[in-house]
Image (cartoon, rainbow, N blue to C red; front, side, top):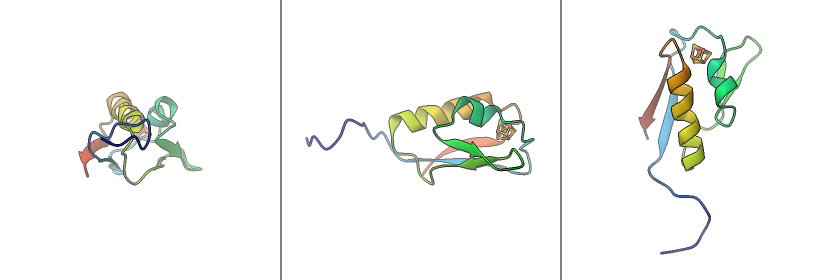
Amino acid sequence: MTDRDNTTHVGTRRLVVDRSACAGHGLCYGRSPQVVDCDDSGYPVLLHELLELDEHIAAAEEAVAVCPERALTLESA
Ligand code: SF4
């Protein structure tokens, strides 16, 4: 076992936005600014192409859970 860093990698994930379903009201980036920002129109901008850190995966799970439009999904990468 190596001691490279303080993170635990449980599997890379990818957060995906369905822009046709997104209403742009911002609950996702309000809840999880570690992984989602917004553009000038209020639509989400994903900050990481791949999620590897536990804290980012947890934040992405919260963003998915808070989205009332079910516009976010968390996939295995
Ligand atoms: S919470 Fe869902 S619907 Fe609202 S901006 Fe985020 S992705 Fe779009």
